Length: 171
Image (tube, rainbow, N blue to C red; front, top):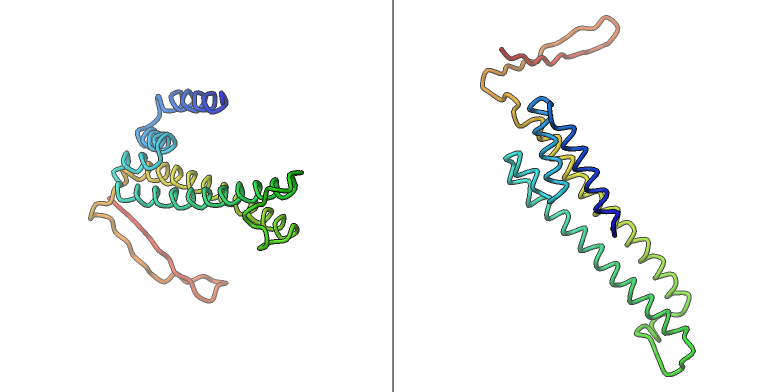
């Protein structure tokens, strides 16, 4: 169990080394990403987007629950297979009469595959909330004043049949 401590120490040292001397927007984005990596949803609070934190928590909780239920089912199936193939004739598993041996092995493989997908889902949810905090960290200081101007105008192209141009400008 020393690997998580080593990885955390490495990431923290790289973060500290990379954040010093960076422009404010880079430092804010890295600070938000590190906060989300340490505590899910914390980067959204750092970016003053607290409404996103419950969404991140809900997605993580949902995928975590899916992982938990699949792992519990897999444990039950493994126990049933062990009981079914032990040498003691007095023990019976909870699935006796409901599933044949082949069905039990097939169900175990399907549940294992679902559990593996759930692990990927938890990892993806965790990664996406960190990436959301990181990308929002760049936009925290983005100018959204009323002086921003946008216009859409036709833009004829010599070889294209139809074209349009979107132009944004700010003083």
